[in-house]
Structures are given as structure tokens and as C-alpha cells.
Image (tube, rainbow, N blue to C red; front, side):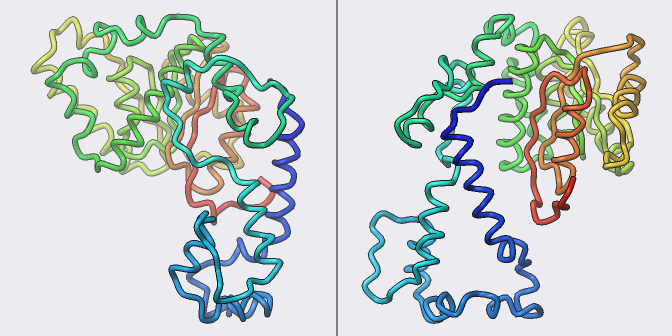
Length: 325
């Protein structure tokens, strides 16, 4: 595990303090605005300032617009303090290109003059990936290893039945997962909450990884299997039999991943589904839109499973998180 610089630790700790201070506001559900009288929970000075504020003025205030200058009202000091604190304690929102991330060199120096300088340093994850690469990216992206991705007539098989937004998310997620799997010399992937298997198909048929899909709803697993067969039918019409033989069809397993599932049972279920007899095996955990408590549960499993070499998850529905997991 890498060592975080002191100023980063301080930033994280201060962020938690602010979150704890305003937890009463963060835990408020929008749908309960009228029934729970959320407006009356705000400090009196906030209500006075926000009661007749113009939407455009409020938007500039909330987004930290540099051109924002309010001559119409005196904002409460506590609200201004929260605005400044959220600005300096937020993670950067700039887009990070995968190529730059994976090829970044350097590491956290631990000695930075300011937070802005610290954020410009290559992340420790990027340094770890670049310094521990075990095979070249050229080899990994060889056309023979990824015929479906490289063939001009087969691009559509991974976008069929998938909306544009989801296509973007899946392609980025799969690319990152494949690169990390390559770095860790890991060929097995466990896709938790796999749904219809769109990500799993890209990892399996596109990047040649062996994927085990864990999904609680049996009807989704059945539909995912049908989509697997549909893809194989389309691919078989274009690729040679020798190329089709290299594919590893995703394995679908109906299982509920919750706090009652131990790391041992999790590993054994995956091994049985994949037909692995060895005592230990290496795998990566992925999850796209891991809902609510599933995200921290997967993080716990990652820590507790010796064979889990990496985890790549994107959470969602944060309002469903349970304290204490």
C-alpha cells in the first residue's frame, strides 16, 4: 500500500468533518421535502437569504462561478464558509484520460506547497500501474487476441441493446479493467451485479477475459445468457471457427451479495461456477453501478479475499447507503 502525503490525509479528514457537521442536511430526501418540512430545518439566516434568490444567482453561487459577485444580498457567513470549504475539499472534476492515467510516471512526493500542486501530481494508482506493467500494451491490444474489438464489422455486437450513455460507461470500464488485469497477470473477472451482462460480454468476447457474472435476479441472468448466444451467433457469421474457439463465454451465477456472504463462500461460489479446482486463484472484482450498500460490501470482500488482485467499481444510489457497513 502506498503512503499518502500528509496534506492529502488532512484534506480527507477535514472533508469528513464537514460532512459530519452537515449530515442532517445530506440525509434529507428530496421526496420528503414537504412531509418533513426540510425548509424549516435550515438556519434562519439561510432561509432569509434563499427565500427570494434568483435561480441564476443561486446557480452561480453553488457552482463557485468565478464571475459571481452578489450586490443584491449579504450572504450568511456560515453559508459562505460552507461554499469555500466545499470548494477546497472537493475532489477535482476534470476528466482524466485513461491513456494519460495508465502511462503516467512519477508518484506522490509527499511534499507539496499547496493543494493545487498536489492534485497535479500523477496519482499513486497510475504510478503503480505504470511501474508494475508485466506485458506490453501492444501485445495486449493485438488484433488476434481481440478479434471482436478489432474487426470493423463487429463493433456493433457490443453496442446492440445498449443506450449511448451506457455504451460510454461500459467501454471505459472495460478498458480500465482489461489494463489492470494485464498488469496483475489476472485472467479471471468477477462482475457483481452484472444485470444483462453488457460489461461482461465486452470483457469476455472483447478482451478475452474469463468472467463470472453474479446477479441476484434470475430473470436478468436468463436474459443475459440469451444475449450471449445472440452475440455468438452474429460473430460466428464473420469470424473463423479457430477465432471463435478462443472465446470464453461468461458464466452466470444467481447469488445475492450482502453482508451475510463471507469471503470464503464468495470465493468458493465463484470457483465452482468457473470450474476451478485449484486451492487459490487470482481474480479482479468489477461492478458498474453498484447500488447502495453493495459498494462497501464489495470493498470488504476485496480486502478479505486473498485472491482478489484488484477492484474496479462505480457506485450509485448513495442515499441508500447504510451506516456501519
